Each structure stands twice: as structure tokens, then as C-alpha cells.
Length: 340
Image (cartoon, rainbow, N blue to C red; front, side, top):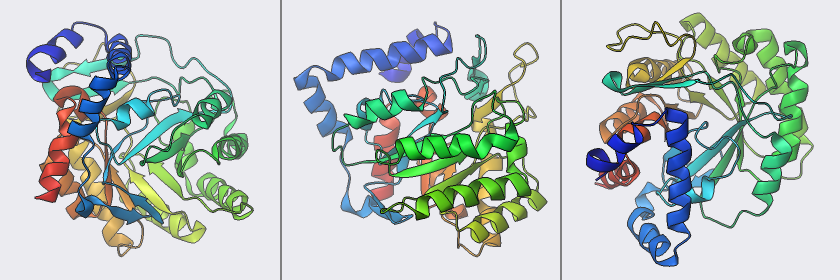
């Protein structure tokens, strides 16, 4: 039904507008008790064998929704009805910001891909915290993906990450340090050894003062060299960071069937990043001796892709772009295959 009817209609609209239309309609449908009950019965079946304990957390299943879909913590309860084991919200920054000018999200249907240069558009961490205060006990894990404001100098980045950490601490289950988006000028330079060590060490010190310790993960770009990945492994192990999310979007454009010259800058996601994402996962897993838990993300559209990521060393996976091209049955189908 999604491929034949819903997707062709949605693809008539600009991507950002289609996104808002989809989640608004989904919310309206779920407000009808009968529909909500049917959806919950159909999608949210979690076989006991799917449960995974990672980072000290118990995930009802290993398939998560990646950050970027729900930037402000508005839709995570609605999206949980599709059967995700965990949902990552954000990237959120201390102060609200508009992000980059539109158009800033582009489909590449021939490649089953997206290019985005959203630029951390969000309502700010205070607004997200207020929404999370009223969340119900939903039985799935929530991650908070945190970043710095565009106008914060890199030398002050740690303070932005600290603000987000403290304001969300009581409401999310784990944190993700996003230093790998290509759409905030200079952000990726925070992946370098010095500044990254400072940020991760600083956040760990803050968490050490909390009565309840929560995991901190690092989200990295797929465009890092092996030497840079070696530095990442060393930093993660030295700072006792709890895991890595591999990977964010890529700035590479090689091998695309779609013409992208008129699109301009932005991060590429979807099928074209699948191979490189898996290579990074495998490299991190092998070089660390399997001592760093990894969430695999990048180009996942079916069970075969999930299996590939897990065989490379991922404990959990996340999806986003694949959901747009394959539709809401994707999560259920992957979980069914995992059980089998």
C-alpha cells in the first residue's frame, strides 16, 4: 500500500513538507482509539529473543529510529507505534535556531538517498525538556542527540554539550555527542583528537557527579581515514565513552546516478553510504577487539542490510532514509526476519 499509493503522493511534495504532512497525519490517526489499538497490535510485537542489553540498557529490540527524524521530541511516542526498540531525538542545541535556509532537504530517488543541510534546526533544549516531562512509560529507550549552536565558537563547544546534558538528564536514557554533521560550519573539526578528548572527558566528569550514570555515545562521520578512526578508538577507550554510532551522513558524491550539481552542499544518506558505513563498523570492531559497542546506521533498507551491519560488529542498528523509501512495514519485516 505504501509503495503503490502513499509514497507516490508524498513524493509530489517537497521533502520537508511531506515529512510534516506524514507525521501530522500519523498523529491524527493514532488519536482514534480503535486505530491506535490496531496499530499497536500490528506493529509493536517484540519477540523475547529480540531483547538486547547494550551500554547497560535493555533494548526490547535492536532496531532504532535515527536522530534527525524527530528533532524536537514531538513525535517519538507516535513513531514508537511502528515497533522501534529505541528512538533517538535531536540533534538539539542549547538555544533555538532556524537552521539553514530552505530548500535544505532533497530526494535522490534513483539512488534511494537524501541530501540534507538542515543545520541543527530545533526549538532548543528547554522546549525539548518540557515535552519530555510529560512522556508516558512507553517501554522503549529514548536517546538524546546533542550538539552545539552554530554561533558558539568551537573552543566553547563543551559548555553547549554540558547544557544539553544537564537539561535532558532526567528524561532520556542515553546521550549522543554529535560532532559529525557536515551542516554546521567547523563542527567536524571537533572530531580531532584534542577537542574531542576534551568534550568527552568533560561530559564524563559531569555524569560522574550524578547519582544515576547514563551512557554517552559518540556519533562519527563516514569520511574519516583509518588513521582518524584509530584516534577515535583510542579516545573512546581512554575516556571510557560507552559506544559509537557509525555513521552520520557523507559529503562524498561518487557513484551516484542522480545529478547533484544544482543541489549544493549537504550530507548524503541512504543506500550510497551503506558500504562505507559497514566498512567503518567493521574497522572499529576489529581494531578495538570488539570492546566498543557500536550502533550501525547508514543505508539500511531491509533485513539483509541489518544482518550485514551486525556481522560487521554492530550490536544495534538505526534507520531513517530507508523508512522514507520502504515505508512503515520495514521495521516489522526486519524484526520478523531477525526472529526467524
